[in-house]
Image (cartoon, rainbow, N blue to C red; front, side, top):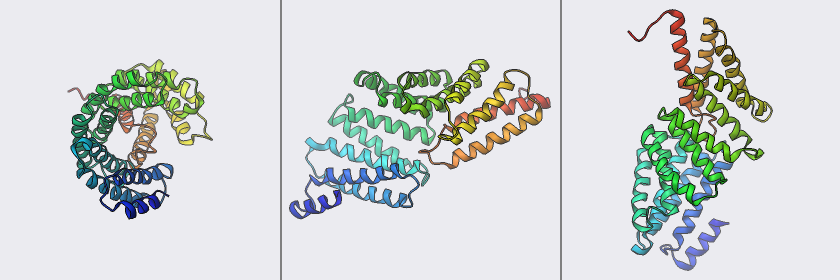
Length: 317
């Protein structure tokens, strides 16, 4: 229907009318949204191609508008960068530097046109933070998300799902930066919003699991087991089979780990399991990945340390 509207407007207004830019932007958004609804669709790549085509048309039209409307150009440039980021998130490409450059350019336009306290500027800044994390610049990603956090806290209801997602994004960047204490705190803030709401059951399970592993990596074994048992009690193998399987595997190991030392064979078996899991997650697109792969790398390092101890290897020398 939107394509029909566009064709009619082009006939009436002409192909260069600035009002078409918003329609082209909406068309691009619809193609990306269709991929989110059907992430396994065979049309995935084609939809992104169509999205880029229409947002490019919006950008061209917006560049010809007066300076009074220049901030709209910033929105379209940010949308273009986000489309490239979304495409990378589905594993179709690595995060391109071009996406980051476009979002940075959009921020400059939005800052000049609307100011740093505008919703458009703050939301675009979080998109840049996500792109930087996926690119591996975790410290800068964490810094940017911390800068935007107060704006979201001041401008959104305290029980807002959008605010919870902001805490989750910050936790992932903090994990990526090795700031485990801060990541646990951010995850707990998200959990305080989700608490008691069955609609967020999967998010609650994942966050409790994540906090459990982070506690383990910091040596808090008792709390790690408690949180994994909490996640295990909420999980359902019929609803979340992979998630339930992972929690059961790790909990089985951790209960023994927090008590008697595990056998060397058990350590090797668990390390092999973790490596297979990491490869699985790394090959998955970010849209369906359950956990940030950095958590698994941390677990692998912990198991490697234990196997070295059993073998009598001292890496400190």
